[in-house]
Length: 266
Length: 284
Image (cartoon, rainbow over all chains, first blue to last red; front, top):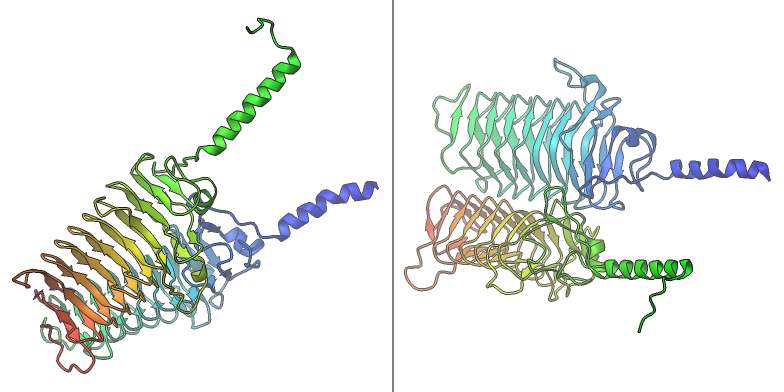
Protein backbone atom coordinates (compact mmCIF):
# COMPACT_ATOMS: atom_id res chain seq x y z
CA UNK A 1 0.00 0.00 0.00
CA UNK A 2 1.25 3.40 -0.93
CA UNK A 3 0.41 4.88 2.44
CA UNK A 4 2.50 2.22 4.17
CA UNK A 5 5.45 2.94 1.94
CA UNK A 6 5.21 6.62 2.75
CA UNK A 7 4.92 6.15 6.48
CA UNK A 8 7.74 3.60 6.79
CA UNK A 9 10.57 6.15 6.69
CA UNK A 10 8.64 8.40 9.07
CA UNK A 11 8.27 5.58 11.58
CA UNK A 12 11.95 4.73 11.27
CA UNK A 13 12.84 8.39 11.79
CA UNK A 14 10.54 8.58 14.80
CA UNK A 15 12.25 5.54 16.32
CA UNK A 16 15.66 7.11 15.74
CA UNK A 17 14.54 10.30 17.45
CA UNK A 18 12.87 8.48 20.33
CA UNK A 19 15.97 6.48 21.29
CA UNK A 20 18.58 8.75 22.81
CA UNK A 21 21.75 8.39 20.77
CA UNK A 22 25.06 8.01 22.56
CA UNK A 23 27.64 10.27 20.99
CA UNK A 24 31.19 9.53 21.97
CA UNK A 25 34.06 11.96 22.02
CA UNK A 26 37.40 11.05 20.53
CA UNK A 27 38.52 9.61 23.84
CA UNK A 28 35.60 7.21 24.02
CA UNK A 29 33.73 9.27 26.61
CA UNK A 30 29.99 9.69 26.10
CA UNK A 31 29.12 13.29 25.27
CA UNK A 32 26.77 15.62 27.12
CA UNK A 33 25.53 18.79 25.51
CA UNK A 34 22.80 21.33 26.14
CA UNK A 35 20.98 20.16 23.04
CA UNK A 36 20.78 16.48 23.95
CA UNK A 37 20.11 17.31 27.58
CA UNK A 38 16.93 19.25 26.82
CA UNK A 39 15.70 17.60 23.61
CA UNK A 40 16.41 13.89 23.42
CA UNK A 41 18.35 12.70 26.43
CA UNK A 42 22.04 12.23 25.93
CA UNK A 43 22.29 8.43 26.10
CA UNK A 44 20.30 5.37 27.14
CA UNK A 45 19.02 5.79 30.67
CA UNK A 46 18.74 9.57 30.33
CA UNK A 47 15.36 11.09 29.53
CA UNK A 48 14.98 14.45 27.82
CA UNK A 49 15.26 17.41 30.17
CA UNK A 50 17.42 18.17 33.16
CA UNK A 51 18.94 16.55 35.08
CA UNK A 52 21.10 14.53 32.75
CA UNK A 53 21.08 11.14 34.47
CA UNK A 54 24.19 8.99 34.37
CA UNK A 55 23.32 5.48 35.49
CA UNK A 56 26.43 3.85 34.08
CA UNK A 57 24.66 1.98 31.29
CA UNK A 58 26.52 4.06 28.69
CA UNK A 59 29.89 3.50 30.30
CA UNK A 60 31.74 5.24 33.06
CA UNK A 61 33.36 8.15 31.19
CA UNK A 62 31.49 11.31 30.17
CA UNK A 63 32.43 14.69 28.78
CA UNK A 64 30.66 18.01 28.33
CA UNK A 65 30.84 19.41 24.81
CA UNK A 66 28.89 22.61 25.54
CA UNK A 67 27.89 24.68 28.53
CA UNK A 68 24.80 23.47 30.37
CA UNK A 69 22.45 26.35 31.11
CA UNK A 70 19.80 25.58 33.72
CA UNK A 71 16.48 27.40 33.70
CA UNK A 72 16.34 28.04 37.45
CA UNK A 73 17.99 27.40 40.80
CA UNK A 74 15.72 24.47 41.53
CA UNK A 75 17.10 22.40 38.65
CA UNK A 76 19.95 19.91 38.95
CA UNK A 77 22.21 19.62 35.93
CA UNK A 78 23.77 16.16 36.23
CA UNK A 79 22.64 13.35 38.50
CA UNK A 80 25.08 10.45 38.79
CA UNK A 81 23.54 7.24 40.08
CA UNK A 82 26.39 4.86 39.32
CA UNK A 83 29.67 4.55 41.25
CA UNK A 84 33.04 5.31 39.69
CA UNK A 85 31.87 7.76 37.05
CA UNK A 86 34.46 10.00 35.42
CA UNK A 87 33.06 13.33 34.24
CA UNK A 88 35.22 15.83 32.37
CA UNK A 89 33.57 19.24 32.10
CA UNK A 90 35.86 19.94 29.17
CA UNK A 91 36.44 23.54 30.19
CA UNK A 92 32.71 24.24 29.92
CA UNK A 93 30.29 25.60 32.52
CA UNK A 94 27.23 24.45 34.32
CA UNK A 95 25.32 27.58 35.23
CA UNK A 96 21.86 28.94 35.84
CA UNK A 97 20.45 31.23 33.20
CA UNK A 98 20.44 34.11 35.68
CA UNK A 99 24.23 33.89 35.82
CA UNK A 100 24.68 33.81 32.07
CA UNK A 101 26.81 36.83 31.25
CA UNK A 102 26.34 38.25 34.75
CA UNK A 103 29.01 40.71 35.81
CA UNK A 104 27.66 41.10 39.33
CA UNK A 105 26.67 38.63 42.03
CA UNK A 106 24.09 36.16 40.73
CA UNK A 107 23.82 33.85 43.75
CA UNK A 108 20.22 32.63 43.96
CA UNK A 109 18.02 32.13 46.97
CA UNK A 110 18.37 28.63 48.45
CA UNK A 111 16.68 25.97 46.36
CA UNK A 112 17.23 22.36 45.35
CA UNK A 113 19.47 22.61 42.29
CA UNK A 114 22.92 21.02 42.24
CA UNK A 115 25.55 21.26 39.52
CA UNK A 116 26.76 17.67 39.81
CA UNK A 117 25.12 15.35 42.31
CA UNK A 118 26.56 11.87 42.85
CA UNK A 119 25.40 9.78 45.77
CA UNK A 120 27.49 6.67 44.95
CA UNK A 121 31.23 6.44 45.59
CA UNK A 122 34.08 7.36 43.33
CA UNK A 123 32.97 10.36 41.31
CA UNK A 124 35.87 11.85 39.38
CA UNK A 125 35.02 15.38 38.25
CA UNK A 126 37.36 17.81 36.60
CA UNK A 127 38.10 20.77 34.43
CA UNK A 128 35.24 23.27 34.37
CA UNK A 129 33.04 25.81 36.15
CA UNK A 130 29.82 25.48 38.14
CA UNK A 131 28.04 28.75 38.82
CA UNK A 132 24.89 29.84 40.63
CA UNK A 133 23.33 26.62 41.87
CA UNK A 134 20.38 26.72 44.27
CA UNK A 135 21.80 24.16 46.70
CA UNK A 136 25.42 23.25 45.94
CA UNK A 137 27.92 23.18 43.15
CA UNK A 138 29.01 19.60 43.80
CA UNK A 139 27.38 17.17 46.19
CA UNK A 140 29.06 13.76 46.11
CA UNK A 141 29.64 10.61 48.12
CA UNK A 142 32.96 9.29 49.33
CA UNK A 143 36.13 8.53 47.42
CA UNK A 144 35.46 11.42 45.10
CA UNK A 145 38.19 13.24 43.26
CA UNK A 146 37.73 16.83 42.11
CA UNK A 147 40.38 18.75 40.23
CA UNK A 148 40.57 21.84 38.12
CA UNK A 149 37.13 23.14 39.08
CA UNK A 150 35.83 26.62 39.77
CA UNK A 151 32.68 26.56 41.87
CA UNK A 152 30.99 29.84 42.74
CA UNK A 153 27.77 31.54 43.74
CA UNK A 154 25.93 28.50 45.02
CA UNK A 155 23.22 29.44 47.48
CA UNK A 156 24.71 27.09 50.05
CA UNK A 157 27.99 25.11 50.15
CA UNK A 158 30.22 25.16 47.12
CA UNK A 159 31.48 21.57 47.39
CA UNK A 160 30.36 18.82 49.78
CA UNK A 161 31.98 15.38 49.61
CA UNK A 162 32.05 12.15 51.59
CA UNK A 163 35.13 10.60 53.17
CA UNK A 164 38.39 9.58 51.50
CA UNK A 165 37.98 12.27 48.88
CA UNK A 166 40.53 14.52 47.19
CA UNK A 167 40.07 18.13 46.07
CA UNK A 168 43.00 19.58 44.19
CA UNK A 169 43.67 22.68 42.11
CA UNK A 170 40.15 23.93 42.65
CA UNK A 171 38.65 27.34 43.45
CA UNK A 172 35.52 27.63 45.57
CA UNK A 173 34.36 31.18 46.12
CA UNK A 174 31.37 33.43 46.78
CA UNK A 175 29.14 30.57 47.80
CA UNK A 176 26.40 31.11 50.37
CA UNK A 177 27.66 28.40 52.75
CA UNK A 178 31.04 26.76 53.26
CA UNK A 179 33.58 26.68 50.48
CA UNK A 180 34.54 23.00 50.78
CA UNK A 181 33.19 20.34 53.14
CA UNK A 182 34.66 16.83 53.20
CA UNK A 183 34.26 13.67 55.23
CA UNK A 184 37.11 11.93 57.06
CA UNK A 185 40.45 10.94 55.52
CA UNK A 186 40.27 13.52 52.76
CA UNK A 187 42.85 15.75 51.11
CA UNK A 188 42.26 19.36 50.13
CA UNK A 189 45.31 20.63 48.31
CA UNK A 190 46.50 23.55 46.22
CA UNK A 191 43.09 25.16 46.19
CA UNK A 192 41.70 28.65 46.68
CA UNK A 193 38.76 29.08 49.04
CA UNK A 194 37.68 32.69 49.09
CA UNK A 195 34.72 34.85 50.07
CA UNK A 196 32.28 32.14 51.02
CA UNK A 197 29.68 33.15 53.57
CA UNK A 198 30.27 30.12 55.81
CA UNK A 199 33.50 28.36 56.79
CA UNK A 200 36.32 28.12 54.32
CA UNK A 201 37.16 24.42 54.59
CA UNK A 202 35.52 21.94 56.93
CA UNK A 203 37.25 18.55 56.84
CA UNK A 204 36.64 15.36 58.80
CA UNK A 205 38.97 13.36 61.05
CA UNK A 206 42.26 12.26 59.58
CA UNK A 207 42.17 14.80 56.79
CA UNK A 208 44.91 16.99 55.34
CA UNK A 209 44.65 20.57 54.12
CA UNK A 210 47.81 21.63 52.37
CA UNK A 211 48.98 24.52 50.22
CA UNK A 212 45.62 26.32 50.13
CA UNK A 213 44.66 29.97 50.24
CA UNK A 214 41.74 30.51 52.60
CA UNK A 215 40.64 34.13 52.72
CA UNK A 216 37.68 36.40 53.32
CA UNK A 217 35.30 33.64 54.30
CA UNK A 218 32.52 34.64 56.65
CA UNK A 219 33.23 32.22 59.44
CA UNK A 220 36.16 29.97 60.43
CA UNK A 221 38.95 29.56 57.88
CA UNK A 222 39.74 25.89 58.52
CA UNK A 223 37.63 23.77 60.83
CA UNK A 224 38.35 20.21 61.97
CA UNK A 225 36.51 18.05 64.50
CA UNK A 226 39.61 16.96 66.43
CA UNK A 227 43.43 17.02 66.49
CA UNK A 228 43.44 13.97 64.22
CA UNK A 229 43.63 16.17 61.13
CA UNK A 230 46.50 18.34 60.02
CA UNK A 231 47.21 21.43 57.98
CA UNK A 232 50.43 22.80 56.57
CA UNK A 233 51.66 25.42 54.14
CA UNK A 234 48.36 27.31 53.98
CA UNK A 235 47.71 31.03 53.91
CA UNK A 236 44.66 31.65 56.09
CA UNK A 237 43.80 35.32 56.22
CA UNK A 238 41.01 37.74 56.94
CA UNK A 239 38.29 35.21 57.68
CA UNK A 240 35.38 36.35 59.83
CA UNK A 241 35.82 33.81 62.61
CA UNK A 242 38.87 32.00 63.94
CA UNK A 243 41.59 31.29 61.44
CA UNK A 244 41.62 27.63 62.44
CA UNK A 245 39.50 25.52 64.78
CA UNK A 246 40.69 22.03 65.76
CA UNK A 247 43.27 20.05 63.84
CA UNK A 248 47.03 20.05 64.24
CA UNK A 249 49.31 22.73 62.88
CA UNK A 250 51.99 20.88 60.94
CA UNK A 251 53.92 24.02 60.14
CA UNK A 252 54.49 26.71 57.57
CA UNK A 253 50.97 28.13 57.88
CA UNK A 254 50.16 31.83 57.94
CA UNK A 255 47.17 32.93 60.00
CA UNK A 256 46.23 36.62 59.97
CA UNK A 257 42.84 38.19 60.34
CA UNK A 258 40.31 39.97 62.49
CA UNK A 259 40.96 38.93 66.05
CA UNK A 260 44.12 37.07 65.16
CA UNK A 261 46.85 39.07 66.82
CA UNK A 262 49.85 37.44 65.25
CA UNK A 263 50.81 35.40 62.26
CA UNK A 264 51.02 32.26 64.38
CA UNK A 265 48.38 29.61 63.71
CA UNK A 266 46.95 27.69 66.66
CA UNK B 1 54.04 -25.09 -18.14
CA UNK B 2 51.58 -22.30 -17.78
CA UNK B 3 49.67 -21.02 -20.77
CA UNK B 4 50.34 -17.46 -21.80
CA UNK B 5 46.68 -17.02 -22.59
CA UNK B 6 45.04 -14.07 -20.92
CA UNK B 7 42.28 -15.01 -18.47
CA UNK B 8 38.68 -14.50 -19.41
CA UNK B 9 36.87 -11.49 -17.85
CA UNK B 10 34.92 -13.87 -15.58
CA UNK B 11 38.08 -15.63 -14.47
CA UNK B 12 39.74 -12.26 -13.92
CA UNK B 13 36.83 -11.16 -11.72
CA UNK B 14 37.03 -14.40 -9.76
CA UNK B 15 40.75 -13.86 -9.31
CA UNK B 16 40.23 -10.33 -8.11
CA UNK B 17 37.63 -11.55 -5.65
CA UNK B 18 39.95 -14.27 -4.41
CA UNK B 19 42.78 -11.80 -3.99
CA UNK B 20 40.45 -9.37 -2.22
CA UNK B 21 39.20 -12.08 0.08
CA UNK B 22 42.76 -13.10 0.90
CA UNK B 23 43.71 -9.49 1.52
CA UNK B 24 40.69 -9.06 3.78
CA UNK B 25 41.49 -12.26 5.67
CA UNK B 26 45.09 -11.14 6.07
CA UNK B 27 43.92 -7.76 7.29
CA UNK B 28 41.68 -9.41 9.84
CA UNK B 29 44.43 -11.71 11.05
CA UNK B 30 46.88 -8.88 11.67
CA UNK B 31 45.88 -6.92 14.75
CA UNK B 32 44.97 -3.39 13.74
CA UNK B 33 46.98 -0.64 15.40
CA UNK B 34 44.97 2.47 16.14
CA UNK B 35 46.77 5.57 17.25
CA UNK B 36 45.28 8.25 19.43
CA UNK B 37 45.65 11.91 18.56
CA UNK B 38 48.93 12.24 20.40
CA UNK B 39 50.51 9.32 18.60
CA UNK B 40 50.08 6.87 21.45
CA UNK B 41 48.80 3.43 20.51
CA UNK B 42 45.18 2.89 21.52
CA UNK B 43 44.04 0.05 23.77
CA UNK B 44 40.35 -0.70 24.22
CA UNK B 45 38.15 -3.55 25.32
CA UNK B 46 37.02 -4.48 21.82
CA UNK B 47 40.50 -4.91 20.39
CA UNK B 48 41.71 -6.56 23.57
CA UNK B 49 39.11 -9.28 23.34
CA UNK B 50 38.54 -9.59 19.58
CA UNK B 51 41.64 -8.97 17.51
CA UNK B 52 44.55 -7.97 19.67
CA UNK B 53 45.31 -4.29 19.85
CA UNK B 54 48.57 -4.09 17.94
CA UNK B 55 51.45 -6.12 16.66
CA UNK B 56 52.68 -8.51 19.29
CA UNK B 57 49.35 -8.67 21.11
CA UNK B 58 47.14 -11.72 20.58
CA UNK B 59 43.37 -11.58 21.08
CA UNK B 60 42.23 -11.96 24.67
CA UNK B 61 43.54 -10.67 27.96
CA UNK B 62 46.11 -9.72 28.95
CA UNK B 63 46.92 -7.05 26.41
CA UNK B 64 50.63 -7.69 25.94
CA UNK B 65 52.99 -4.80 25.29
CA UNK B 66 56.35 -6.03 24.04
CA UNK B 67 57.45 -2.70 22.61
CA UNK B 68 57.20 -3.69 18.95
CA UNK B 69 54.28 -1.26 18.50
CA UNK B 70 56.05 1.56 20.33
CA UNK B 71 56.43 2.68 23.91
CA UNK B 72 53.39 4.95 24.39
CA UNK B 73 49.89 3.59 24.91
CA UNK B 74 46.54 5.08 25.88
CA UNK B 75 43.27 3.49 26.92
CA UNK B 76 40.29 4.62 24.86
CA UNK B 77 37.74 2.58 26.78
CA UNK B 78 37.59 0.81 30.10
CA UNK B 79 38.95 -2.73 30.17
CA UNK B 80 36.54 -5.14 31.81
CA UNK B 81 38.17 -8.34 32.99
CA UNK B 82 36.06 -11.48 33.24
CA UNK B 83 37.43 -12.90 36.49
CA UNK B 84 40.00 -12.34 39.27
CA UNK B 85 42.56 -14.57 37.54
CA UNK B 86 42.81 -12.34 34.48
CA UNK B 87 45.44 -9.64 34.07
CA UNK B 88 44.55 -6.50 32.15
CA UNK B 89 47.88 -5.39 30.67
CA UNK B 90 51.22 -7.18 30.77
CA UNK B 91 54.34 -5.22 29.92
CA UNK B 92 57.30 -7.14 28.57
CA UNK B 93 59.77 -4.38 27.85
CA UNK B 94 61.24 -1.34 29.57
CA UNK B 95 60.28 2.33 29.39
CA UNK B 96 56.62 1.84 28.50
CA UNK B 97 54.15 4.66 29.18
CA UNK B 98 50.46 3.84 29.70
CA UNK B 99 47.90 6.64 29.96
CA UNK B 100 44.67 5.20 31.33
CA UNK B 101 42.89 8.22 29.87
CA UNK B 102 40.48 8.48 32.78
CA UNK B 103 39.25 4.95 32.10
CA UNK B 104 39.26 1.90 34.31
CA UNK B 105 40.66 -1.56 34.41
CA UNK B 106 37.94 -3.28 36.33
CA UNK B 107 36.78 -6.81 37.06
CA UNK B 108 33.29 -7.48 35.69
CA UNK B 109 31.88 -8.23 39.13
CA UNK B 110 32.92 -4.77 40.28
CA UNK B 111 31.13 -2.82 37.56
CA UNK B 112 28.42 -0.88 39.33
CA UNK B 113 29.14 -2.60 42.64
CA UNK B 114 28.16 -0.54 45.66
CA UNK B 115 29.65 -2.92 48.22
CA UNK B 116 33.01 -4.67 48.43
CA UNK B 117 33.80 -6.73 45.35
CA UNK B 118 37.25 -7.93 46.43
CA UNK B 119 37.99 -11.53 45.45
CA UNK B 120 41.34 -13.37 45.42
CA UNK B 121 42.93 -14.65 42.25
CA UNK B 122 46.06 -14.34 40.15
CA UNK B 123 45.23 -11.36 37.96
CA UNK B 124 46.63 -7.85 38.17
CA UNK B 125 45.55 -4.63 36.53
CA UNK B 126 48.96 -3.84 35.05
CA UNK B 127 52.05 -5.92 35.59
CA UNK B 128 55.54 -6.28 34.26
CA UNK B 129 56.38 -9.74 33.01
CA UNK B 130 59.71 -9.46 34.81
CA UNK B 131 61.01 -6.98 37.34
CA UNK B 132 63.94 -6.55 35.01
CA UNK B 133 61.67 -4.35 32.89
CA UNK B 134 62.27 -0.87 34.25
CA UNK B 135 60.74 2.54 33.79
CA UNK B 136 57.05 1.76 33.50
CA UNK B 137 54.85 4.86 33.67
CA UNK B 138 51.14 4.60 34.47
CA UNK B 139 48.82 7.55 34.93
CA UNK B 140 45.29 8.92 35.05
CA UNK B 141 42.75 6.20 35.70
CA UNK B 142 41.29 3.58 38.01
CA UNK B 143 42.06 -0.06 38.68
CA UNK B 144 39.35 -1.90 40.59
CA UNK B 145 38.90 -5.41 41.96
CA UNK B 146 41.99 -7.24 40.80
CA UNK B 147 42.53 -10.76 42.15
CA UNK B 148 46.17 -10.29 43.06
CA UNK B 149 47.27 -6.67 42.84
CA UNK B 150 46.50 -3.39 41.13
CA UNK B 151 49.86 -2.40 39.69
CA UNK B 152 53.06 -4.43 39.79
CA UNK B 153 55.96 -2.48 38.34
CA UNK B 154 59.71 -2.94 38.24
CA UNK B 155 62.19 -0.31 39.28
CA UNK B 156 62.34 3.29 38.10
CA UNK B 157 58.58 3.33 37.67
CA UNK B 158 56.38 6.40 37.86
CA UNK B 159 52.76 5.93 38.91
CA UNK B 160 50.64 9.08 39.05
CA UNK B 161 47.00 9.99 39.52
CA UNK B 162 45.79 6.41 39.63
CA UNK B 163 43.08 5.12 41.95
CA UNK B 164 43.52 1.51 42.94
CA UNK B 165 40.94 -0.24 45.07
CA UNK B 166 39.58 -3.64 46.05
CA UNK B 167 42.62 -5.62 45.00
CA UNK B 168 43.10 -8.88 46.88
CA UNK B 169 46.84 -8.12 47.12
CA UNK B 170 48.88 -4.92 47.16
CA UNK B 171 47.33 -1.85 45.60
CA UNK B 172 50.47 -0.38 44.03
CA UNK B 173 53.82 -2.15 44.10
CA UNK B 174 56.94 -0.82 42.41
CA UNK B 175 60.65 -1.57 42.54
CA UNK B 176 63.46 0.69 43.60
CA UNK B 177 64.00 4.28 42.48
CA UNK B 178 60.32 4.67 41.69
CA UNK B 179 57.94 7.61 42.16
CA UNK B 180 54.33 7.17 43.25
CA UNK B 181 52.50 10.46 43.36
CA UNK B 182 48.97 11.79 43.62
CA UNK B 183 47.41 8.33 43.74
CA UNK B 184 44.66 6.87 45.87
CA UNK B 185 44.98 3.33 47.13
CA UNK B 186 42.27 2.01 49.36
CA UNK B 187 40.38 -1.11 50.43
CA UNK B 188 43.05 -3.42 49.09
CA UNK B 189 43.84 -6.58 51.03
CA UNK B 190 47.62 -6.06 51.06
CA UNK B 191 49.70 -2.91 51.31
CA UNK B 192 48.30 0.30 49.92
CA UNK B 193 51.59 1.31 48.34
CA UNK B 194 54.82 -0.69 48.47
CA UNK B 195 58.02 0.62 46.90
CA UNK B 196 61.61 -0.52 46.73
CA UNK B 197 64.67 1.42 47.92
CA UNK B 198 65.34 5.03 46.96
CA UNK B 199 61.77 5.80 45.98
CA UNK B 200 59.55 8.85 46.47
CA UNK B 201 55.96 8.45 47.63
CA UNK B 202 54.15 11.80 47.69
CA UNK B 203 50.69 13.29 47.77
CA UNK B 204 48.79 10.03 47.97
CA UNK B 205 45.71 9.02 49.98
CA UNK B 206 46.15 5.52 51.34
CA UNK B 207 43.10 4.38 53.25
CA UNK B 208 41.55 1.20 54.64
CA UNK B 209 44.03 -1.32 53.31
CA UNK B 210 44.35 -4.70 54.97
CA UNK B 211 48.07 -4.50 55.59
CA UNK B 212 50.50 -1.55 55.74
CA UNK B 213 49.47 1.81 54.34
CA UNK B 214 52.83 2.72 52.82
CA UNK B 215 55.76 0.34 52.91
CA UNK B 216 59.23 1.45 51.83
CA UNK B 217 62.83 0.28 51.83
CA UNK B 218 66.17 1.98 52.33
CA UNK B 219 66.68 5.58 51.32
CA UNK B 220 63.13 6.50 50.39
CA UNK B 221 61.19 9.72 50.97
CA UNK B 222 57.54 9.70 52.06
CA UNK B 223 56.06 13.16 51.63
CA UNK B 224 52.65 14.70 52.27
CA UNK B 225 50.55 11.55 52.17
CA UNK B 226 47.36 10.78 54.01
CA UNK B 227 47.54 7.34 55.65
CA UNK B 228 44.46 6.29 57.58
CA UNK B 229 42.49 3.26 58.72
CA UNK B 230 45.01 0.72 57.44
CA UNK B 231 46.10 -2.27 59.51
CA UNK B 232 49.36 -0.41 60.10
CA UNK B 233 50.53 3.02 58.99
CA UNK B 234 53.97 3.70 57.59
CA UNK B 235 56.70 1.08 57.58
CA UNK B 236 60.31 1.42 56.57
CA UNK B 237 61.52 -2.10 55.87
CA UNK B 238 65.16 -1.08 55.53
CA UNK B 239 67.57 -3.92 55.83
CA UNK B 240 70.93 -3.64 57.54
CA UNK B 241 71.85 -0.78 59.83
CA UNK B 242 71.07 1.92 60.38
CA UNK B 243 67.32 1.55 59.90
CA UNK B 244 67.04 5.29 59.88
CA UNK B 245 67.69 6.01 56.24
CA UNK B 246 64.14 6.67 55.10
CA UNK B 247 62.55 10.03 55.87
CA UNK B 248 58.97 11.16 56.09
CA UNK B 249 57.55 14.67 56.17
CA UNK B 250 54.16 16.34 56.10
CA UNK B 251 52.10 13.17 56.39
CA UNK B 252 48.83 12.65 58.22
CA UNK B 253 49.03 9.17 59.72
CA UNK B 254 45.96 8.43 61.80
CA UNK B 255 43.81 5.64 63.10
CA UNK B 256 45.86 2.79 61.70
CA UNK B 257 45.27 -0.38 63.64
CA UNK B 258 48.60 -1.66 64.88
CA UNK B 259 50.67 0.86 66.84
CA UNK B 260 52.93 2.62 66.41
CA UNK B 261 51.66 4.61 63.47
CA UNK B 262 55.18 4.69 62.04
CA UNK B 263 57.81 1.97 62.28
CA UNK B 264 61.37 3.09 61.66
CA UNK B 265 62.47 5.97 59.47
CA UNK B 266 63.29 9.57 60.35
CA UNK B 267 60.64 12.17 61.17
CA UNK B 268 61.59 15.17 59.02
CA UNK B 269 58.83 17.29 60.50
CA UNK B 270 55.25 18.39 59.95
CA UNK B 271 53.86 14.87 60.41
CA UNK B 272 50.77 14.03 62.40
CA UNK B 273 50.65 10.58 63.99
CA UNK B 274 47.57 9.70 65.98
CA UNK B 275 46.24 6.23 66.51
CA UNK B 276 43.62 4.40 68.50
CA UNK B 277 44.26 5.14 72.13
CA UNK B 278 46.91 7.79 71.45
CA UNK B 279 46.44 11.10 73.16
CA UNK B 280 49.54 12.86 71.94
CA UNK B 281 49.88 13.50 68.22
CA UNK B 282 53.64 13.03 68.01
CA UNK B 283 55.41 10.84 65.49
CA UNK B 284 58.22 8.57 66.65
